[in-house]
Image (tube, rainbow, N blue to C red; front, top):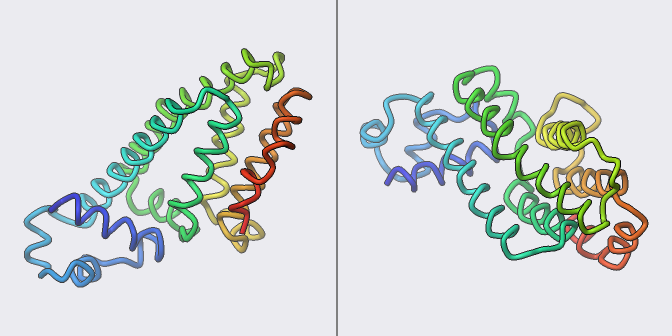
Length: 204
């Protein structure tokens, strides 16, 4: 039942942000009483934590599966981008802000995951791309990884007004193109050109 609660809550948070969703809203969406909801979580803070960690675990599993199925570094990035866009295409830009401001403990867990698991996956992709002569050999891997993670955060947040008005899919697709064109060798850029439909199919 907790998994079902987290899945339902995740959809509500994605659409409306975290602050505006109450325990009553979640109970109503699940067609259960608030008393029943409190049998599984003690308060909204705990609900947020369970939901965010469940979301992170889902992203990890899906990303690992895509990485394991694809040996080409650029294809890995494009496949994961498609997955992220499908999951977050209707994300409310206030979600990260709400998490940071009103649920600091869970935000810290989110940050720790980002600094460990996410950093490692991106760095591994960069190393693979360099080995395949798709990415430039002179890349500073820690810095490039950090910049890439920062760009992902900007796509998810509403900190920059001009970006907050742009649909997530369009922002994320442009960000991936921006990232790849900055790090690719001529061979890598040729590969992107030959697979342009993969990069552009989710831009709107």
